[in-house]
Amino acid sequence: MIVVGVDGSRAGLAAVGWAMREADMRGVKVRIVYVVPTCPYEMSEDTPHAYGRWMRERVTPVLADALRRAHSQTPRVEVESDLLQGDPRLGLIRASKDAELLVVGDRGLGGFQELLLGSVALGVSGQATCPVAVIREALAQPRDEVVVGVDGSSGGGAAIEFAFIEADLRGAELHAVHAWSEPAARLIPETVPATIDQAGAERLLLAEAVAGQGERYPDVKLVEHIERGHPVEVLKKASTGADLLVVGSRGRGDVAGLLLGSVSHSLLHHVTCPLVVIPVADSA
Image (cartoon, rainbow, N blue to C red; front, side, top):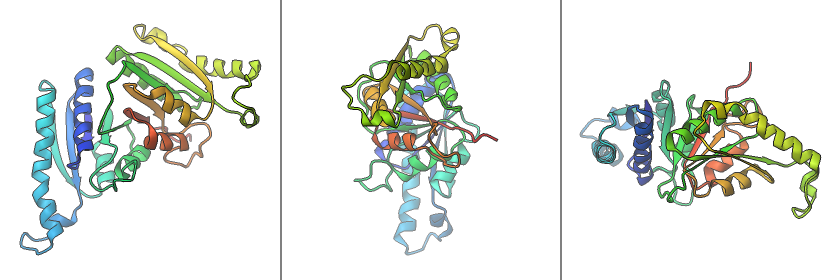
């Protein structure tokens, strides 16, 4: 099952459309969830509080619009809808507990126009136990390419596995991208070639990270990229126009207690294609 969160925003409807296409490829159903604050439902119907009335009146149309979008786009996919009460982030996380994917828009109605990412998208990406797809309202025409960030971390294998599955489902090329930057290398101008030894070690890291996946997914064309530079900038450039970018929630350089790593956090704000963040469990 795929769970998708809506809130009446255009980004939410874009998330519904993306979730329906994904469910069609996977052969699973979709659950559309609208989580609203509890307070409007604790108010009486005759309360003069405008906010409470507004919230109650907008719930039904929001779910109806989302269902219409879902049925019109992919009628053969089974879809259901649920209204939940509480904090939207916690509600979506709980609703997706048994899901294989949680899908949200990058910005909701509660976000300020100048913000690049909504609080719900950021919150669920750091706390959900299943992969989280963050969908932009306006998506460019994809180029049949899935990009996965590879950093050699212990949890990165889950992101690579997910990316191979997606590429296989879509019949797309898979680009495995590894960016590296040693402290000393940051002082060297980009025009100066990296040392052969260091570059070779980084290529070996990438090769070992994807080893064995080709046998499991023989129809996926794998293209390996290695580039010296900051992972955010390298992945942002590599994923422009791609169908999907897949990253782990935390990488090698992140503190174990963090819910969301610095690279995945930055990519959530800056990439223009759909982004899937794969949860990385803390080691015991």
